[in-house]
Length: 126
Image (cartoon, rainbow, N blue to C red; front, top):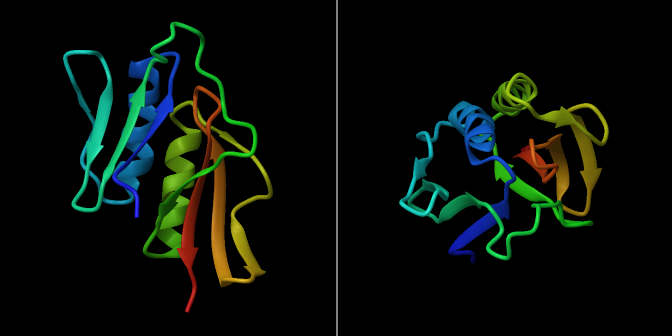
């Protein structure tokens, strides 16, 4: 459905350390910084990117926005969450755990990245 997602970052290197850690815990390669200073994580299914805002204003979180990353297991989600906490992220919402809703049982782990973007690591339980 999506070709790419890009979030704003105030410090690309700091954010790259965070995303290299959490996405590395999910099995992805470290991000690549282009000539314009943006960082890209390339996958077979799409691209996740971080960039300083083009308008020169500080990056800020989108109120009500969440970027979700899929985990293969609850252990992978926990490892991703822990990696985020040790690289400048902060926990938000409830602690990682199972929630039930219209999509069934989901294991969710929420974080804020160094620029305050809200991240969710999701494992859909069988």
